Length: 482
Image (cartoon, rainbow, N blue to C red):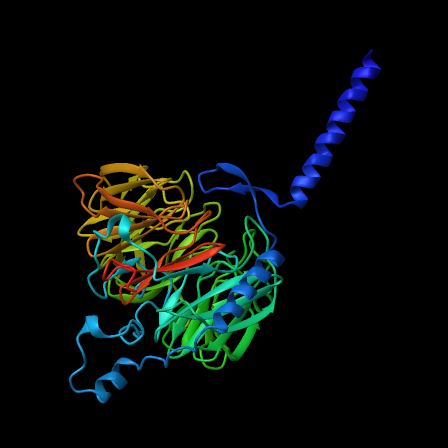
C-alpha cells in the first residue's frame, strides 16, 4: 500500500516537474514587485524582445525621412528676429533645450521648474508616441531635442538616442554585456553635458559618447579600474558631471570607492574612500556654504570635495540595497530616507573653526520610508512614497500631515505644484502638493508592465519607460499634441 502511494506521489511530482518545465520554456516567470509581492506572468526572453524591437525600428526607418533637426535656442534667435507664436511652432522646433540632462533633473531633486504644465488633462491624455524599448531600469536624459537612455537588447547593452517629438530612433551604440538579477539589463541613467553622453552599464562598462552621432569618445571598465566586484543588483548609480569631471561609484578599496574621470579624455583624476558601493546616485550641492558631492556608500552618507575627493563630513548609514537619493532641504539641511524599515532623518550641517563640516540630527521619523524611490520638497513639506503609499511630512519637524493612495514601488516628480506619480503598475497619477490632504486629481494607464524607472521631463514633455515600453506625453498642452 505504501509503495503504491509513494509511486503515485512520485508520478505526480514528475508530472508537475514536466508541466513546470513546459511553462518555463513558454516564458512563465515569477515577477517580483517592490513591496515584496510576486506574480506569475508569461514573459519573452531577451533575445525575443530584441528581435521585436529591431522589427519595430526597421519599420520606423522605412517610414518618411526624419524632419531636419530643430536649431538650438541661440541659432533660432539668430535666424528670426520675430519667432512665430509657441502654439504655431512644430513640436520639434519648440523642444530643443538642454534642461533635463541628469538623473531626476538638473538639480537631481525630482523637481521640474522649466515651465508650467497642465495638471488637469484627465482621462483624455494620449501619448505623443509609445513604442517598445529594451530592458533595464534606467531613465532618460534630454538635450537638443533628443531623449537618451540605456537598455538591454539581447546579449548587448545599448545606448540609444530618440527624437523627443516623434520617438524615432536616431542612433545606437552597443557592446556585449548581459546582467540578469531581478530583471534584465542596465540600471544607471546616463548623464549629458556639453554634447557628450556618459553611459554606465550594469557590469561596469563606462563610455563617453558623442551626443550627435553616438560615436565612442573613450571607454573604461570602472570595476576593473577600481579592483572592485559588482554589486548584487549591478552598477545603478548615475554618473555625475562636476565641472570637467564625471563621477562614478565603483565601490573599490584603496581609495577607489568613488572615482572622478576627466570628461574629455577619460583619464582618472581622483579617487576617494575604501567603502563598498551603493545604488544611490551622487549629487552636487552647496551645504553650509560648502560646495560638495553628496552621496551614499555602502556604510555611510558623505560629503566630498569636488576638486580632489577629500572627505568633508560623514554620517554612518548602513542599509541593505541603498538606492534612494538624499534630499537637499535647505541651505544647511539634508533629508535622508533610505532603506526598507529604516527611520528617516533630517540633518543640519555646521562648519567648525577648522572648516570641517559636522552633521547634527534635527529630527527622526518612521513616517516616510522611501525604498528605492526618492522624496521631493515643496514649500516646506516633503512628499514621497512611504512604502507603497504616498505621504506628506512637515520638513521642519517630521510631523505626518497625511498619507493616502496606493502606488506600489513607483516614482515621484514635482511640477507646477503637483506630484506626478508613475505607479509600479505603469499608471500616471496627478496629486496636489498640498499638506492639508491627499488629493488625487486623476490617474490614467500609461505603459504596460512593472515600472520601476524614474520619469524624466523637459520642454513640457514627460518621458516614461519600463523594461518593455516607453512613451512621451505633452503636459504643456495636456493633449496628444497631434
